[in-house]
Image 1 (cartoon, rainbow, N blue to C red):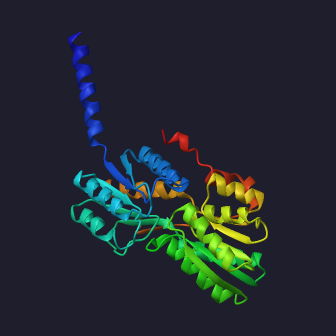
Image 2 (image 1 turned 135 degrees about the vertical axis):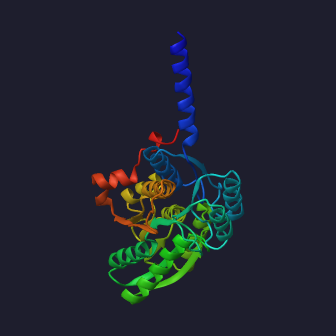
Image 3 (image 1 turned 60 degrees about the vertical axis):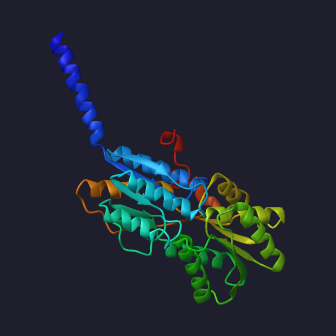
Length: 317
């Protein structure tokens, strides 16, 4: 009996040691509400399981709340997490807290959106400039190279969406001289505000032929405006990101094409890169993930289904 008890105590002690030796990676999102961030969270959880680390997930409820995101990063640094993965809501405002983390010896991966500083171990994101080009070329083809277009942009300072917007504008100007962008407004990551902005643009430009939206919230709000005005299928619409609502809008013809990212892989690669650094490896400085153009006919493809419908319940309890 004494031997059994001693072995049991030793087993419990070793188990506790193993738990305490697991590294903790703080994962900070831009927001919480949109489907995109839920998929990022699921990918981060999957990577933590595969790499034997724990994660601490947090982010502001609203993507415009930059000060709250800064507070979250600073609190994780104060908690002495072993590593960080941060999606900067604003490319300049997050520089100081991220630099502070690196100065304290905490490796940081920047993901989803860029930072005006090179002080990170890896940058994991969709190639957003390329994604903007894809959107411009798809809308240009839908319009046969002629027409008037309006754009629903995301929010100033968000590097990822700004890259898409810049690429869209530049590609339209260079490759489709018969298409003119006649108006654009920011939706500030708020579907209701996007709806109002889209209504304003459609009122100001009743002869518009095409529309582009650069993020999930912008896409949802713009689609609502088209449906409210019975313009589904009449105004050719290329939207960005994916969610159940947007996929339904693609199926019913309100949206002609989605430029879709793989948020699950973004979350996975972000955590994996930090875990590799903590294990003594050197992850790539930049990890580009390509966006995909999805039309209604693509929805039956197995690889598209897997990307659009990750099994979130497997990872998020």
